[in-house]
Length: 335
Image (cartoon, rainbow, N blue to C red):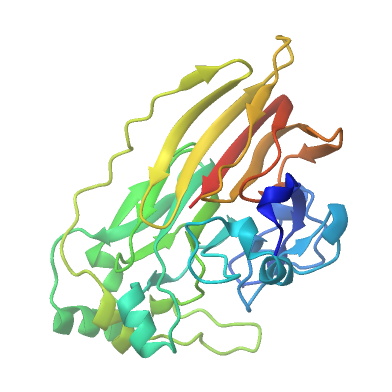
């Protein structure tokens, strides 16, 4: 473990994502974000992940080529003092391209997952909408309350969609999807997702689609019914967002919950002499996901890290002082 009294400060580094070729995916993650992952479809990129189902690889600096999970195992101090489990990244950050509708699904909370899924974390998540087709929608809970028996019957009969609340979405929308909320991303949505580090998904309905082997994908009806919130939901409202300005940067809080905090930062230093200054405290790492534009991250040791749309940067806790220069939009995620 690094000696914090030595004055040494950890450097940020780029990450290379793992890709997922789920049948509902498209091509935009390669086309728009230059991921260069040889998958078609490319449904998801796991930008910052230590999960066994898809691990990020360090793409710059002294750890280049190593799995992020291995780096954090050797350097748990990079996670910060808030992280109690040695070497475990508590979140997972994705980009999602939905060319088709995703399955109607639900995720368990931590207590259910721990008991029924071998000690796994549950899954609460947040979506930030990067782009949409004109008629794109999401499923967000139920239009009215329903009991377990009626829901199960509708799933078996293929009529469950009539109970679901479908919401039109637009670019820049934010949705908080707590564990237990029945949900689905609709066709035409391009989304950044921040979630607990979990890959537990219970499918209720999948439109009777066939996978690449000609088989219907598995449903998890009983487990889904165990964890689903069956109460009716009011249509979700967009949260109040207030931009705060500092030289070269405007920022706004998108989401804060017990698992993560997400801010959107608008970097524009092209017309001012000041650069956007940034560093992490001892309590948490940060992850910077560039969702638009490009720029340079300057380190106090003189190193410079160029970043472009789609790049993901891990900034260890208690980092050296950093300066951002360029014109870019970033999601800044911490715990």
